[in-house]
Amino acid sequence: MSILHINIMTRTQKSFDEKVKRLNSSSKKSTPKKSTSTKITIIQSRKKDLFPHMGIAHKFPYYFEPMPEIADKLNRAWFDQYFGEERMIAHIKKHKLKSHQYKAYVNYWWLKEQK
Image (cartoon, rainbow, N blue to C red; front, side, top):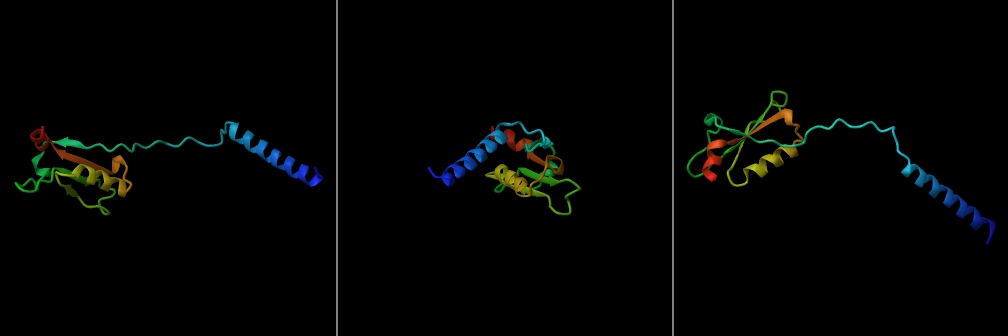
């Protein structure tokens, strides 16, 4: 073997050993992140005045209300009975909202009818 070949091998081995050592060592430099709740909670509401769009043909039993801190960016919204829950969740995820920035409701009386 030539000297050049041995030199390359030792450099590669040394680099490999350093990387393995770095990966296996526990790093205490990273600070734990504050976990924010990403769980989307939909509250059942008996208040019929929150759901003015509960007509005969088209029903909108899901209601999204932005809190005052983001009310200037987002409007109130109602979602239909067919895919309303999925659309409301997609709306919340699209705008990357945290649980304290909105309230999500579903009509209690409509849920009771569905059962």
